[in-house]
Image (cartoon, rainbow, N blue to C red; front, side, top):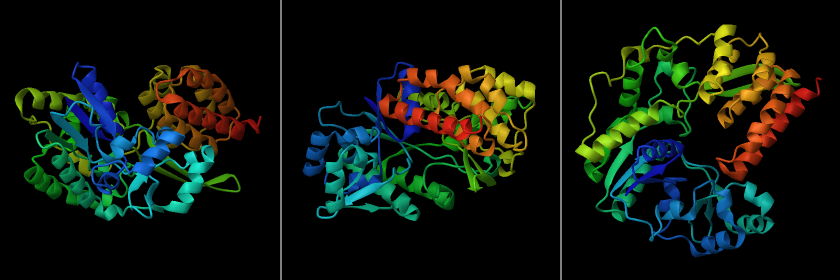
Length: 397
């Protein structure tokens, strides 16, 4: 049995493998600290609280078993474990007396007053130091090796923040760019100490990059990583400063290639790279922002795909003086349900408070109401955000 541990990247990889008929499962982890804070057991009181109050509904797939044991004792034992350098969920809480650490969405406090009272009496919030993450992760690997002595371990590395991945590459692992240069030496040490196979995302992405014809838009980082994290600073409701970061966590072209490497390992016992799978010199140079004409924008929006839509909306931010809200409204009925895209449109509504965006919200809401893939909490949050955008711009109607 193959298991993938980590964050959403391993979820995407698990889906790519499962689509090929590989028997595999995904387990979402919260932080190395949760597993390391107990001696291979779920704290009894926390287990009782979860049973009585339904706490796991507020853990976003980071079930208590995942947080403390990796797997339930009744689940099939793994023959291969794939884990990535996953980010730590926040907030994390420690119970003052027994000192175990767990992740819980504070939304549980609003829904479950009894949980809020207990946590205020017995728990305190903690913030892990990003600078010591590699040390925590190494101890987690040690725990994983102790727990599953015969399983093959595969570590999927994190994509390095190369200048060509701008503006300001963003990933969810806190302050990764400050300690990413220490990671290669850690990978080598872990491979020797715990018998980890290393699956290098930089090399895999380099192969994807090399396979994209240079005369096509796909050679640009915007095609592979179109999502932006956007900060809009306002004063009196008027935008004063815009900050853009490129999300390099969500790369749709990555998961099939990583699946190829895992299948190669399962069949041959090796992970091999070809000559094109080496970071190119071009990655050391910043890439110019992508600017698209009206025809190109409409072509992307017409597809109804989350990546083309994100690429189009990202291009809007490169031309902040131009208002593209009418264009968004025209294609609202085919807009994909995607929380990363909705983040971008939400921020765009703070720059252009155009009532046309209220039309987009009304056109998009039926698709969001019919979307059940990510569960009821996702749907509720998503619909709430659509409502916030609509209320923000509808006042101008």
